[in-house]
Amino acid sequence: MPTGRIWYLVMNSSRLRILRGLPGANGPAVAELAMQSGRPFLRDFLGDRSHRKPEQASSGFDPVRADMVQFLHEIAEFLTAQRHGDGFEALVLVAPPEVLARWHAEVPGDLQSAVCCEVARNLVRLPARDLGHEILTQLEALEGRFRPASRPAADRPDSPADPGPDGR
Image 1 (cartoon, helix red, strand yellow):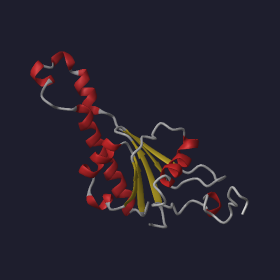
Image 2 (tube, rainbow, N blue to C red; image 1 turned 60 degrees about the vertical axis):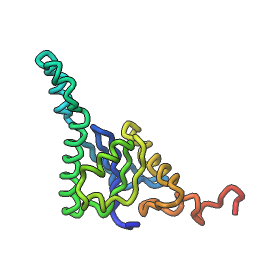
Image 3 (cartoon, rainbow, N blue to C red; image 1 turned 90 degrees about the horizontal axis):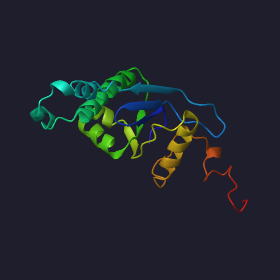
Image 4 (tube, rainbow, N blue to C red; image 1 turned 90 degrees about the vertical axis):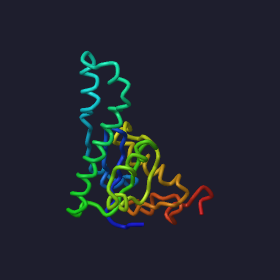
């Protein structure tokens, strides 16, 4: 498990929130970056309804999927630049299962190798004050397979600083 800079990517098919660390028990909020898809394929598809022929409507083209793929490519381009600029050492992905599947199909291998953990949940709409703590909760639910380096020992239930329920 990396011990350096971990970025937490919380995304769905059209929105990305990046936490550059997680908050401690009483620590300040962490810096957050955000990106949003312009959904150009869906806008074109819906805006061109009057000119569309019936055979075009049943062509199998999925504008929502096309927008997600384009958005993932934009994210990959941004993350590649940040990684080369010493922005992060590892990534944690938090996204719905269909977005995680598309990530694996569309994102280059060098970025995929930076991913140290995945959580199949859509947390994008959580308020900023709750997001970091919910990510910690989800990661702990992975049965100890992940221990974020940025979480202070006193904030972990298994820490000696926490006497536990019996006071020991």
